[in-house]
Amino acid sequence: MVDQLPPVRPATPPLSPASVLLRLAGIGGVVAVILGGFYYVNGTLDPQRLSPGKLVNALEHNNGVHPGYRRNHAKGLCVAGYFQGSGAAQALSSAQVFGTERTPVVGRFALPSGNPYAPDSSVPIRSFALRFTQANGQQWRTGMNSMPVFPVGTPEAFYQMLQAGAPEAATGKPAPGAMPAFFAAHPETAAFLQWVKTAKPSASYATERYNGINAFYLVNAAGQRQAVRWGVVPLGQDAAGAAAPDAADYLEQDLDKRLAAGPLKWQFNLTLAEAGDPTSDASKAWPEGRKVVDAGTLVLVKAQAQNDGECRDINYDPLILPSGIEGSDDPLLAARSAAYASSYVRRTGEVDQLPKEPQP
Amino acid sequence: MSAATSHFSPLARLLHWLMALMIIAMLFIGAGMAASVSARHEWLLNLHKPLGIAILLLVLVRLFVRLTTRQPPLPADLPGVQVLAAKLSHVLLYALMFILPLVGWAMISAAGDPVMLGSSLQLPGILPANPEVFAFLRKAHTYLAYLLFFTVLAHLAAALFHGWVRRDGVLQSMMRGKEG
Image (cartoon, rainbow over all chains, first blue to last red; front, side, top):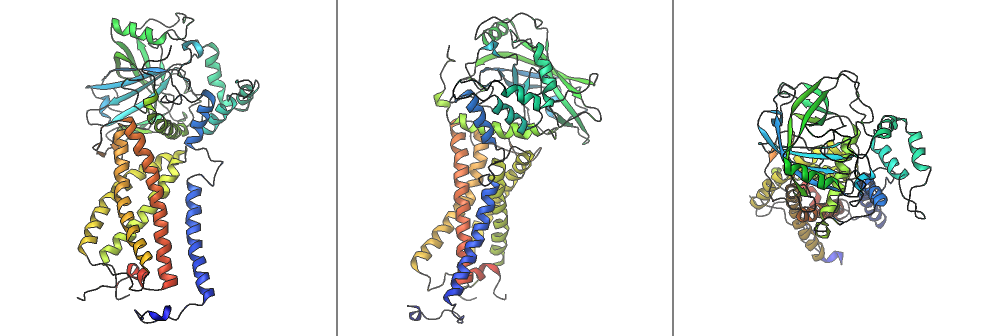
């Protein structure tokens, strides 16, 4: 067969069968090395690695899968309003939001659990997420919580905490000693445990302070960087302390009632780090007495049910930041960004399965 | 000039090798960032987006170069099934090089996220925000990326087969010019 073909170019000496095999093996070797490298990088050949999917699977395992809902902080409601900058933070950050123009905001209040039917009184923590849309099109998204520190400082420790809280097949509850054993093995949880000892489920989302917890950098027009943590403090709302009703769903009605009476306001505070304050560990509070800049007033004017509200399709990824705000070396930031992305693609593919109204 | 050429034009070769490097880097960056919760996730993502747009721009230049320069013909003795595989795999490579960055851009748009190529460079969204469209495009981005990875791998294996086993000048036509 070979000798039927005319030579198309100066003949090269034919390869021996052994040489052909060797060369084919060489090609196979090149392909295998690239394939192996790729499947290591994508995690298949590195099963120990903590991936976004693993974190979200753990949340689903602990809370059940509720199609269409966020895999964590599943129960909540949408709110909308604006941020009125004071101008006081302009020296610290070039972000447009810190000017004195109003910036529209779409936010979300929620409970910190992956169960969209959790009773409002089941946890003493409430969360508040915000999306600021600047006039230049850039966005700032942040998720805040009513506690002052995060229980742990790394995604690995967070994953272990989820595993400690995993329900056992027989009882449907976590193993009795698992959580205490986790806390004992993680002394960094002390500040959070101290706070949670006296924390009570609040009767309202409106009376809470919410803390960004993770550190960020503000960058001003001259390129100077200042590490900060941010948070909001309620303005003129009833003081906390009113006992929470012993009911499953009261936070949404409370907020609707308050908004019907008028806008709700919070002061947006930037706490400035001093040298040595940890930016990479959200489980550690910064010392008292740090300078606080009042960046402006957050004003909420309306609320919407989350299943068809504007916040439903927003992924409150803490690393979607405008020019003038940057993430810090806090390892939880990248982990939150990566895990939220995984939760987001799962739930956006299920929006048609969401009930129209929250179930009773 | 002769009717047939035995090598790709210098510009075609430059674009081929530059984009080969970028696309292989891009495939590994994408696979790595999607599987990581560490700080790597963030800095890989910040590389992924501008690199994707650069590939999209380069593939337009490359298509123009492809259509306006002469390509060396495949060897006359190449079996028909290999000729067909060569032609189809090249169509697939060009299609994926073009579609993948567009799907990436479109999915960020459909998520309602600002399309940022750096801390302040922003591209317009190319689709309105829509969760179901996002979920579809996000999954398509992954499946198409794997298809591109395997097509690139097959392309590489075929090129080495031409160069090491058939020794028919096909690999040489992309390696160097006529003088080489």
